[in-house]
Image (tube, rainbow, N blue to C red; front, side):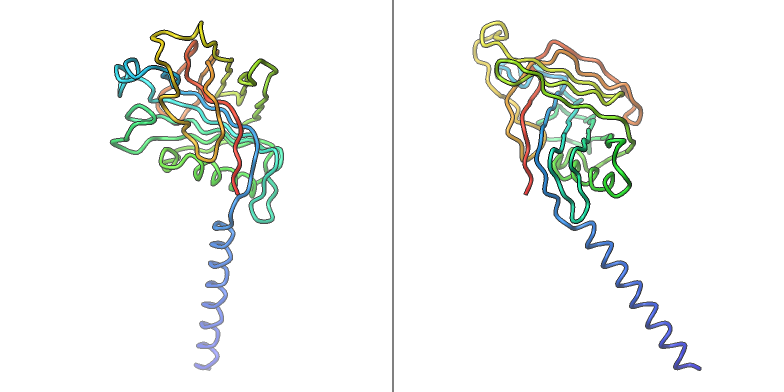
Length: 229
């Protein structure tokens, strides 16, 4: 009898270990994806050093990042045609060293199933790096991210209900203020090829961050593409 009990305990232990290893393997599987990317924040990214320095840790603490995955895979989970949005609120200007962890809300595509939603959250956290290590809320919404035809392909529009973003091309003359403008802050996400753009609308009206915002008429966006292998 004792031998049977011991064998039973051993078998149970082995099955639990196998299940744990399978779960860990599913979470560790690499995500490959490519598609469209857009972001905006509440300070200019295309600006001169004098203006940027004057805004350090005063503005630019809020931002939105969005990815539309045209082709993507997380192990045997397809991410084709799905989108994910990250909304971030930080203690310091985004792009500067943070004195405390930022807070983030992740919005996953309402078309995604449970496995896809889990992969989308992990994808956003991996691409957002340190800014997305403290995700305080995850919820699903219909997400529409499209590029609109324009001169330098910088006109994007995002509608995720509680998060909205619309960009425009920057004008080399109209948008200059000091004449020393350049891409002062790099994009917030990794693995992107993006160009600075103007913001027509940038808003977050959801919950989870303790604040909402509506911003416009800034040189505060990046638009382009991403590829993760």
